Image 1 (cartoon, helix red, strand yellow):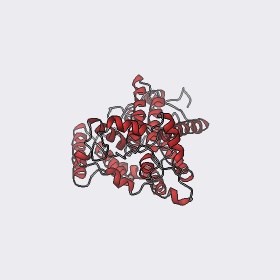
Image 2: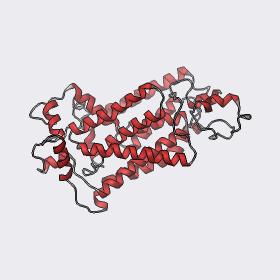
Image 3: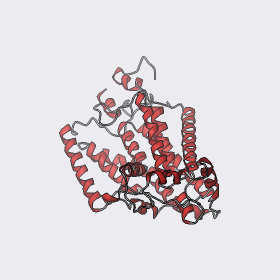
Image 4: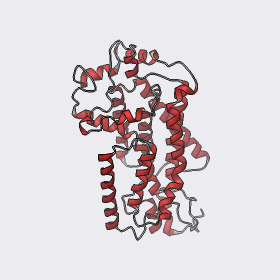
Length: 359
Protein backbone atom coordinates (compact mmCIF):
# COMPACT_ATOMS: atom_id res chain seq x y z
CA UNK A 1 0.00 0.00 0.00
CA UNK A 2 1.31 3.44 -0.90
CA UNK A 3 2.22 5.32 2.27
CA UNK A 4 0.91 8.55 0.78
CA UNK A 5 -2.54 7.12 0.26
CA UNK A 6 -2.83 5.05 3.43
CA UNK A 7 -5.78 6.03 5.59
CA UNK A 8 -4.35 7.26 8.93
CA UNK A 9 -7.47 5.95 10.65
CA UNK A 10 -6.28 2.39 10.11
CA UNK A 11 -2.51 2.90 10.00
CA UNK A 12 -2.12 2.01 13.68
CA UNK A 13 -3.75 -1.36 13.16
CA UNK A 14 -1.53 -2.18 10.19
CA UNK A 15 1.67 -0.81 11.73
CA UNK A 16 1.14 -2.84 14.90
CA UNK A 17 1.28 -5.97 12.78
CA UNK A 18 -2.04 -7.27 14.02
CA UNK A 19 -3.20 -7.70 10.42
CA UNK A 20 -1.50 -8.03 7.08
CA UNK A 21 -1.39 -4.85 5.03
CA UNK A 22 -3.36 -5.61 1.91
CA UNK A 23 -5.82 -7.99 3.61
CA UNK A 24 -8.74 -5.59 3.53
CA UNK A 25 -12.49 -5.90 3.28
CA UNK A 26 -14.61 -4.32 0.58
CA UNK A 27 -14.67 -1.03 2.48
CA UNK A 28 -10.88 -0.90 2.64
CA UNK A 29 -10.75 -1.86 6.31
CA UNK A 30 -8.63 -4.71 7.68
CA UNK A 31 -10.39 -8.06 7.37
CA UNK A 32 -11.89 -9.50 10.54
CA UNK A 33 -14.15 -12.43 11.16
CA UNK A 34 -16.54 -10.75 13.58
CA UNK A 35 -17.50 -7.07 13.95
CA UNK A 36 -16.89 -7.14 17.69
CA UNK A 37 -17.45 -3.39 18.00
CA UNK A 38 -21.21 -3.83 17.57
CA UNK A 39 -23.16 -1.12 19.40
CA UNK A 40 -25.85 -3.67 20.29
CA UNK A 41 -23.30 -5.76 22.20
CA UNK A 42 -23.27 -3.64 25.33
CA UNK A 43 -21.07 -4.60 28.24
CA UNK A 44 -24.12 -5.44 30.34
CA UNK A 45 -25.63 -7.55 27.56
CA UNK A 46 -22.37 -9.39 27.01
CA UNK A 47 -22.01 -10.17 30.70
CA UNK A 48 -25.58 -11.45 30.87
CA UNK A 49 -25.09 -13.61 27.78
CA UNK A 50 -21.86 -15.04 29.14
CA UNK A 51 -23.54 -15.86 32.45
CA UNK A 52 -26.25 -17.74 30.55
CA UNK A 53 -23.55 -19.53 28.54
CA UNK A 54 -21.68 -20.59 31.67
CA UNK A 55 -24.91 -21.78 33.27
CA UNK A 56 -25.90 -23.78 30.19
CA UNK A 57 -22.47 -25.33 29.90
CA UNK A 58 -22.56 -26.21 33.59
CA UNK A 59 -25.88 -28.03 33.12
CA UNK A 60 -24.42 -29.89 30.14
CA UNK A 61 -21.48 -31.01 32.30
CA UNK A 62 -23.79 -32.11 35.10
CA UNK A 63 -26.25 -34.13 33.02
CA UNK A 64 -24.29 -35.17 29.91
CA UNK A 65 -20.61 -34.76 30.73
CA UNK A 66 -17.58 -33.20 29.11
CA UNK A 67 -17.77 -32.62 25.37
CA UNK A 68 -15.32 -35.14 23.97
CA UNK A 69 -15.69 -34.98 20.20
CA UNK A 70 -14.91 -32.33 17.62
CA UNK A 71 -18.54 -31.54 16.78
CA UNK A 72 -19.55 -31.01 20.41
CA UNK A 73 -16.50 -28.91 21.19
CA UNK A 74 -16.88 -26.68 18.12
CA UNK A 75 -20.62 -26.35 18.74
CA UNK A 76 -19.97 -25.06 22.25
CA UNK A 77 -17.30 -22.72 20.96
CA UNK A 78 -19.82 -21.37 18.44
CA UNK A 79 -22.31 -20.75 21.24
CA UNK A 80 -19.51 -18.98 23.10
CA UNK A 81 -18.93 -16.61 20.17
CA UNK A 82 -22.67 -15.92 20.01
CA UNK A 83 -22.69 -15.03 23.70
CA UNK A 84 -19.60 -12.86 23.28
CA UNK A 85 -21.13 -10.95 20.36
CA UNK A 86 -24.65 -11.13 21.70
CA UNK A 87 -25.84 -8.00 19.89
CA UNK A 88 -24.58 -9.01 16.47
CA UNK A 89 -27.03 -10.24 13.86
CA UNK A 90 -27.43 -13.84 12.75
CA UNK A 91 -25.53 -13.10 9.58
CA UNK A 92 -22.48 -12.54 11.73
CA UNK A 93 -23.10 -15.67 13.78
CA UNK A 94 -23.59 -17.79 10.66
CA UNK A 95 -20.19 -16.62 9.43
CA UNK A 96 -18.73 -18.94 12.06
CA UNK A 97 -20.33 -21.94 10.38
CA UNK A 98 -19.22 -20.79 6.94
CA UNK A 99 -15.63 -20.49 8.11
CA UNK A 100 -15.47 -23.57 10.31
CA UNK A 101 -17.30 -26.29 8.40
CA UNK A 102 -14.22 -27.10 6.29
CA UNK A 103 -11.75 -27.50 9.18
CA UNK A 104 -14.31 -29.48 11.19
CA UNK A 105 -14.87 -31.82 8.24
CA UNK A 106 -11.11 -32.34 7.93
CA UNK A 107 -10.81 -33.03 11.66
CA UNK A 108 -13.63 -35.57 11.52
CA UNK A 109 -11.89 -37.33 8.63
CA UNK A 110 -8.68 -37.31 10.68
CA UNK A 111 -10.38 -38.58 13.83
CA UNK A 112 -12.11 -41.54 12.24
CA UNK A 113 -9.24 -42.32 9.87
CA UNK A 114 -6.96 -42.40 12.90
CA UNK A 115 -9.21 -45.05 14.40
CA UNK A 116 -8.77 -47.16 11.26
CA UNK A 117 -5.12 -46.33 10.62
CA UNK A 118 -3.89 -49.79 11.60
CA UNK A 119 -6.38 -51.39 9.18
CA UNK A 120 -5.84 -49.19 6.12
CA UNK A 121 -2.43 -50.77 5.43
CA UNK A 122 -1.88 -54.02 7.36
CA UNK A 123 1.59 -53.49 8.81
CA UNK A 124 3.14 -55.17 11.85
CA UNK A 125 2.76 -53.31 15.14
CA UNK A 126 6.10 -52.15 16.54
CA UNK A 127 6.55 -52.99 20.21
CA UNK A 128 10.17 -53.58 21.20
CA UNK A 129 11.97 -50.63 19.56
CA UNK A 130 10.60 -47.91 21.87
CA UNK A 131 11.12 -50.17 24.89
CA UNK A 132 14.82 -50.56 24.04
CA UNK A 133 15.25 -46.77 23.76
CA UNK A 134 13.34 -45.92 26.94
CA UNK A 135 15.05 -48.63 28.99
CA UNK A 136 18.39 -47.32 27.79
CA UNK A 137 17.31 -43.82 28.78
CA UNK A 138 16.12 -45.01 32.20
CA UNK A 139 19.14 -47.13 33.02
CA UNK A 140 17.44 -50.48 32.42
CA UNK A 141 13.96 -49.45 33.53
CA UNK A 142 11.50 -47.34 31.56
CA UNK A 143 10.98 -43.74 32.77
CA UNK A 144 7.28 -44.62 33.10
CA UNK A 145 8.06 -47.24 35.74
CA UNK A 146 10.36 -44.84 37.56
CA UNK A 147 7.61 -42.20 37.70
CA UNK A 148 4.91 -44.62 38.81
CA UNK A 149 7.17 -45.96 41.58
CA UNK A 150 7.77 -42.39 42.71
CA UNK A 151 4.33 -40.81 42.37
CA UNK A 152 1.77 -43.61 42.53
CA UNK A 153 0.79 -45.32 45.78
CA UNK A 154 1.91 -48.93 45.67
CA UNK A 155 0.66 -51.23 44.38
CA UNK A 156 0.00 -48.75 41.60
CA UNK A 157 -3.36 -49.04 39.84
CA UNK A 158 -6.08 -46.81 38.43
CA UNK A 159 -8.07 -47.49 41.62
CA UNK A 160 -5.33 -46.46 44.03
CA UNK A 161 -5.98 -43.12 45.80
CA UNK A 162 -5.08 -40.16 43.54
CA UNK A 163 -2.90 -37.33 44.79
CA UNK A 164 -3.40 -33.60 44.26
CA UNK A 165 -0.97 -33.58 41.36
CA UNK A 166 -3.05 -36.20 39.58
CA UNK A 167 -5.81 -33.61 39.26
CA UNK A 168 -3.30 -31.24 37.66
CA UNK A 169 -1.90 -33.88 35.30
CA UNK A 170 -5.32 -35.11 34.18
CA UNK A 171 -6.46 -31.52 33.58
CA UNK A 172 -3.38 -30.88 31.46
CA UNK A 173 -4.02 -34.12 29.57
CA UNK A 174 -7.59 -33.10 28.76
CA UNK A 175 -6.56 -29.66 27.49
CA UNK A 176 -5.27 -31.45 24.39
CA UNK A 177 -8.86 -31.82 23.17
CA UNK A 178 -9.83 -28.17 23.59
CA UNK A 179 -6.69 -26.00 23.58
CA UNK A 180 -6.05 -25.91 19.84
CA UNK A 181 -9.65 -25.16 18.93
CA UNK A 182 -10.00 -22.61 21.74
CA UNK A 183 -6.98 -20.72 20.41
CA UNK A 184 -8.59 -20.87 16.98
CA UNK A 185 -11.79 -19.25 18.29
CA UNK A 186 -9.84 -16.43 19.96
CA UNK A 187 -7.97 -15.78 16.72
CA UNK A 188 -11.18 -15.99 14.70
CA UNK A 189 -12.66 -13.27 16.91
CA UNK A 190 -9.55 -11.13 16.42
CA UNK A 191 -8.68 -11.59 12.75
CA UNK A 192 -9.58 -14.24 10.25
CA UNK A 193 -6.15 -13.97 8.62
CA UNK A 194 -4.34 -15.19 11.72
CA UNK A 195 -7.05 -17.79 12.31
CA UNK A 196 -6.28 -19.25 8.87
CA UNK A 197 -2.58 -19.44 9.74
CA UNK A 198 -3.22 -21.27 13.00
CA UNK A 199 -5.69 -23.69 11.45
CA UNK A 200 -3.14 -24.44 8.72
CA UNK A 201 -0.69 -25.59 11.39
CA UNK A 202 -3.34 -27.35 13.45
CA UNK A 203 -4.56 -29.43 10.51
CA UNK A 204 -1.03 -30.04 9.23
CA UNK A 205 0.17 -31.59 12.47
CA UNK A 206 -2.97 -33.71 12.73
CA UNK A 207 -2.66 -35.15 9.24
CA UNK A 208 1.12 -35.43 9.49
CA UNK A 209 0.67 -37.61 12.56
CA UNK A 210 -2.03 -39.64 10.78
CA UNK A 211 0.36 -40.53 7.95
CA UNK A 212 2.93 -41.77 10.46
CA UNK A 213 0.29 -43.77 12.36
CA UNK A 214 -0.60 -45.57 9.14
CA UNK A 215 3.00 -46.31 8.20
CA UNK A 216 4.37 -47.01 11.68
CA UNK A 217 1.79 -48.50 14.07
CA UNK A 218 3.29 -48.79 17.53
CA UNK A 219 2.05 -50.10 20.87
CA UNK A 220 2.07 -47.63 23.79
CA UNK A 221 3.59 -48.60 27.17
CA UNK A 222 0.32 -49.69 28.81
CA UNK A 223 -0.43 -52.07 25.93
CA UNK A 224 3.10 -53.46 25.84
CA UNK A 225 2.86 -54.08 29.57
CA UNK A 226 -0.49 -55.87 29.24
CA UNK A 227 0.97 -58.10 26.52
CA UNK A 228 3.99 -59.00 28.65
CA UNK A 229 6.69 -57.12 26.74
CA UNK A 230 7.82 -55.00 29.69
CA UNK A 231 9.89 -56.61 32.42
CA UNK A 232 8.58 -54.03 34.91
CA UNK A 233 4.80 -53.66 34.71
CA UNK A 234 3.29 -50.23 34.20
CA UNK A 235 -0.35 -49.20 34.52
CA UNK A 236 -2.46 -46.89 32.40
CA UNK A 237 -3.50 -44.09 34.76
CA UNK A 238 -5.28 -41.76 32.33
CA UNK A 239 -8.25 -40.07 33.99
CA UNK A 240 -6.74 -40.53 37.44
CA UNK A 241 -7.41 -37.43 39.54
CA UNK A 242 -10.81 -36.68 38.03
CA UNK A 243 -12.45 -39.85 39.33
CA UNK A 244 -13.55 -38.15 42.56
CA UNK A 245 -15.36 -35.55 40.41
CA UNK A 246 -17.16 -38.22 38.41
CA UNK A 247 -15.17 -37.42 35.27
CA UNK A 248 -12.56 -40.14 35.38
CA UNK A 249 -14.04 -42.11 32.47
CA UNK A 250 -13.78 -39.41 29.81
CA UNK A 251 -10.78 -41.12 28.23
CA UNK A 252 -12.79 -44.31 27.77
CA UNK A 253 -15.28 -42.41 25.59
CA UNK A 254 -12.42 -41.05 23.50
CA UNK A 255 -10.91 -44.53 23.20
CA UNK A 256 -14.01 -45.73 21.35
CA UNK A 257 -12.96 -43.75 18.25
CA UNK A 258 -9.24 -43.94 18.91
CA UNK A 259 -6.52 -46.25 17.73
CA UNK A 260 -4.49 -47.89 20.49
CA UNK A 261 -1.44 -48.29 18.23
CA UNK A 262 -1.42 -44.65 17.07
CA UNK A 263 1.33 -43.80 19.54
CA UNK A 264 4.29 -42.59 17.47
CA UNK A 265 4.50 -39.61 17.44
CA UNK A 266 2.61 -38.40 20.49
CA UNK A 267 0.08 -35.89 19.16
CA UNK A 268 -0.65 -34.78 22.73
CA UNK A 269 2.99 -33.72 23.08
CA UNK A 270 3.20 -32.49 19.50
CA UNK A 271 0.17 -30.21 19.68
CA UNK A 272 1.27 -28.85 23.07
CA UNK A 273 4.66 -28.07 21.55
CA UNK A 274 3.02 -26.49 18.49
CA UNK A 275 0.98 -24.19 20.73
CA UNK A 276 4.09 -23.20 22.66
CA UNK A 277 6.24 -22.68 19.53
CA UNK A 278 3.48 -20.66 17.88
CA UNK A 279 3.01 -18.48 20.94
CA UNK A 280 6.74 -17.86 21.32
CA UNK A 281 6.95 -16.89 17.65
CA UNK A 282 3.84 -14.68 17.54
CA UNK A 283 3.95 -12.90 20.88
CA UNK A 284 6.39 -10.24 22.03
CA UNK A 285 5.88 -10.28 25.79
CA UNK A 286 8.73 -11.79 27.78
CA UNK A 287 6.14 -14.06 29.45
CA UNK A 288 5.72 -15.96 26.19
CA UNK A 289 8.61 -18.24 27.16
CA UNK A 290 6.46 -19.60 29.99
CA UNK A 291 4.39 -21.33 27.29
CA UNK A 292 7.20 -23.88 26.98
CA UNK A 293 6.13 -25.27 30.35
CA UNK A 294 2.93 -26.56 28.74
CA UNK A 295 4.54 -29.23 26.52
CA UNK A 296 6.91 -30.16 29.33
CA UNK A 297 4.09 -30.79 31.81
CA UNK A 298 2.07 -32.57 29.13
CA UNK A 299 5.03 -34.82 28.33
CA UNK A 300 5.61 -35.63 32.00
CA UNK A 301 1.93 -36.55 32.29
CA UNK A 302 1.97 -38.79 29.23
CA UNK A 303 4.99 -40.75 30.41
CA UNK A 304 3.73 -41.04 34.01
CA UNK A 305 0.29 -42.22 32.85
CA UNK A 306 1.88 -44.86 30.55
CA UNK A 307 0.26 -43.30 27.50
CA UNK A 308 3.56 -42.71 25.70
CA UNK A 309 7.25 -43.50 25.75
CA UNK A 310 9.80 -40.72 25.88
CA UNK A 311 10.72 -41.48 22.27
CA UNK A 312 7.09 -40.74 21.28
CA UNK A 313 7.40 -37.34 22.96
CA UNK A 314 10.56 -36.58 21.00
CA UNK A 315 8.75 -37.57 17.82
CA UNK A 316 5.84 -35.26 18.66
CA UNK A 317 8.19 -32.32 19.29
CA UNK A 318 10.01 -33.00 16.01
CA UNK A 319 6.71 -33.08 14.09
CA UNK A 320 5.61 -29.78 15.66
CA UNK A 321 8.91 -28.16 14.70
CA UNK A 322 8.63 -29.50 11.15
CA UNK A 323 5.10 -28.10 10.83
CA UNK A 324 6.19 -24.68 12.07
CA UNK A 325 9.14 -24.57 9.69
CA UNK A 326 7.09 -25.84 6.76
CA UNK A 327 4.17 -23.45 7.28
CA UNK A 328 6.50 -20.50 7.83
CA UNK A 329 8.29 -21.29 4.57
CA UNK A 330 4.96 -21.59 2.74
CA UNK A 331 3.77 -18.24 4.08
CA UNK A 332 7.03 -16.48 3.26
CA UNK A 333 6.74 -17.69 -0.33
CA UNK A 334 3.25 -16.19 -0.43
CA UNK A 335 4.55 -12.90 0.97
CA UNK A 336 2.74 -13.20 4.29
CA UNK A 337 4.05 -11.79 7.53
CA UNK A 338 5.40 -14.31 10.00
CA UNK A 339 4.77 -12.81 13.42
CA UNK A 340 2.78 -10.36 15.45
CA UNK A 341 4.10 -7.13 16.84
CA UNK A 342 1.56 -7.33 19.64
CA UNK A 343 -1.55 -9.28 20.48
CA UNK A 344 -4.73 -8.19 22.21
CA UNK A 345 -7.26 -10.81 23.14
CA UNK A 346 -10.98 -10.58 22.47
CA UNK A 347 -11.62 -9.57 26.08
CA UNK A 348 -9.87 -6.30 25.35
CA UNK A 349 -11.89 -3.36 24.15
CA UNK A 350 -9.48 -3.12 21.24
CA UNK A 351 -9.21 -6.65 19.89
CA UNK A 352 -8.14 -6.94 16.29
CA UNK A 353 -11.64 -6.53 14.88
CA UNK A 354 -12.57 -3.89 17.40
CA UNK A 355 -9.49 -1.87 16.55
CA UNK A 356 -10.46 -2.03 12.91
CA UNK A 357 -13.97 -0.97 13.67
CA UNK A 358 -12.99 1.95 15.84
CA UNK A 359 -10.11 3.14 13.71
